[in-house]
Length: 95
Image (cartoon, rainbow, N blue to C red; front, side, top):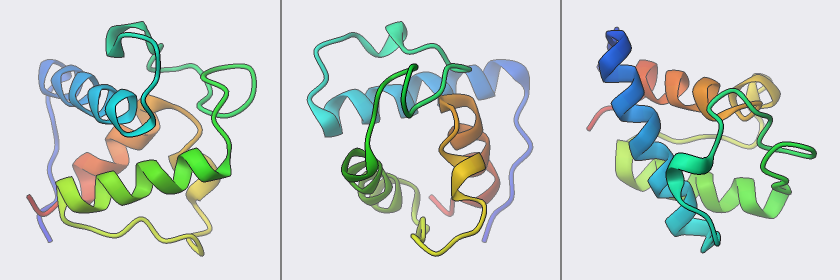
């Protein structure tokens, strides 16, 4: 497993890439750039539900080469925002 520490610009680029993955996976009617990196993915923020999160986890697993497991106790934190999800990807991706 490759653990990466990203610069601010690299993290911003990865956030944009992950936002694109989310928009494409869920067929959202919004541009990826409209997703606030710090807004909640659930509820009042992006308004995703558990099925949406499963779709995102599948896309992330295929694209970045690691599994997001449903039994991970950190899932609430990981999926709390686009920024947290992206930081988790940066720390765990293999591709």
